Image (cartoon, rainbow, N blue to C red; front, top):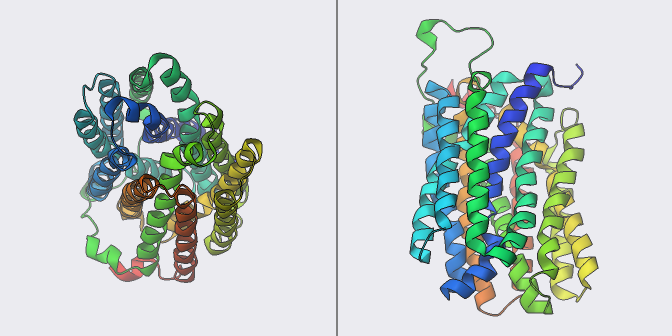
Length: 406
């Protein structure tokens, strides 16, 4: 079947992609501002990474419970309030008098951020034909990483000219406008089955968490997501600071490095999405992608490249990471039961929050020790570890969820 989305599917994917764009935009709102925030609050890089850690840990803790709620009661009435709360928290950060209140608001935002992946994947899995799901997941991932890529391009110039507080306020307002768009289109965001279920079947019993633990592929995907997030968080939170300290670049000049990495991911996702419906071998794409990515990071850490070459190398690193992303999502969906899609995605995506928290703090601590090269080498090591989990998960792909829950 032709993998092109029909008009109804395109509308749903567009709305969900907007929510995903906002989620990733907020995740990467603060890290590019860390050098400015460090001057204001007079704190260490590890303390700043702790903001990301709080956000990530709280998000990880809420994703599975929210997945259970979504599977039982539906996603659209949870997704929209979640986006509104996250947006409001970032607006309020612009008025925070101390880093303590940044931590509090980051925790609240993290709790609300837990809605996105369970809700998004639940709605997409029900609204899009399974033959076109790889394309839908690729578009969804594309716009998520577009949020990552846009964040530094927006917040750095605003932060330099009007202060980091103005940057958080502007992005928070954008999130509230996006919330309104979703609310006005709420009827399109149904995650009910296309065939109307019997009344007795509308509220199903949640699949127990113990059943998920019995599926090797899902457990291994949790590990994959965790180490992937550790690598990505270490880079997105501290790569700019590491390169400033290691090579003496100015803050303004390195502002293109992180967007280059993120736009590389987007390009990789676009190409990977074109083939995900035909070729979803996560073991091969992850092995190739992460080997290239880790190797390029090791080169940047050990060899003094000029700035333009570093920017190009970061793009290659991102492209290799992005290429395997659609295959990753297709594999998770393949081993998840229809009645627990949000739970399965909520569980494995909790690894994003946990890994993001660990990576931000560990790499920040390494940077505080003065080991700038380590802030690039360690994320590369995390990528290689993530690769091994992906290969193992693909090996166990045949152990489908229904065997563990039969």
